[in-house]
View 1 (cartoon, rainbow, N blue to C red):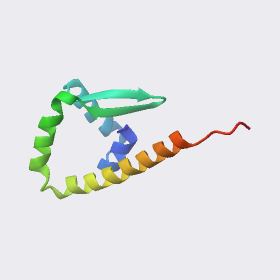
View 2: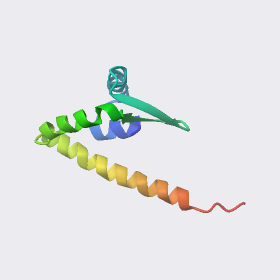
View 3: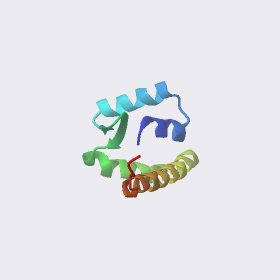
Amino acid sequence: MCISDLEHILEFTQTKTSRHLIYLKNSGILNTRKQDQWVFYYLKDEVFEIIGQIFQFLNKDQTLLNDQVIYKTMYNNRELAQNKLETKTWQPQ
């Protein structure tokens, strides 16, 4: 996810979101991938399982459940948009 997605889901400011992402990246939990002007953050493979176990405990938290619904909607919309861009045939003008 990119920072603007996380800001929207968490309802944090850009500054607060960036600060927390830096903490997670410096701790070895997150990695980044740059695509054009966007920086996407993702969990490192080696921590994916433990994070999944943590989320099992957090599944009773209503705020987290609401955040997950927003995330799934945004993810599905991004997948649709990306697919549309990849299949679009560009015509010379």
